[in-house]
Length: 159
Image (cartoon, rainbow, N blue to C red):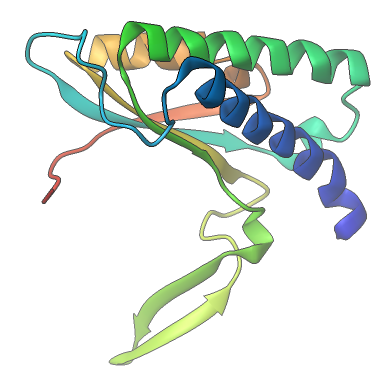
């Protein structure tokens, strides 16, 4: 399993480094609140980056470099537009823990909650006027060419 994880781990480490570098260069934290330059009513949407690790198994160094450049440009667009609230890369799905109730008892299991080979590799939390804008931002994400992005409105946030 470790050999299979290396390409995806390397790729996502590259995305993490790109986000970190971008936040340092721009003076923004990827966990910062919404930029003050956006005005008007807004809603938060979670963009869940769904991937299949096999899609990354044969990625050439040139393709990886192009993808990193594309991700940097996309992240910069989100920041400049003032819509990025948070972003992050998740550890591989085989490191996940599921917590659930079974026969009245709390249980914990290792593993991915999704079925099949699909994993949630990362996320963006954006603050935009509506669903059209949220799906528009998802369509611009370079990861859509190697997986999919699920767009979910945040229905309630206690803080």
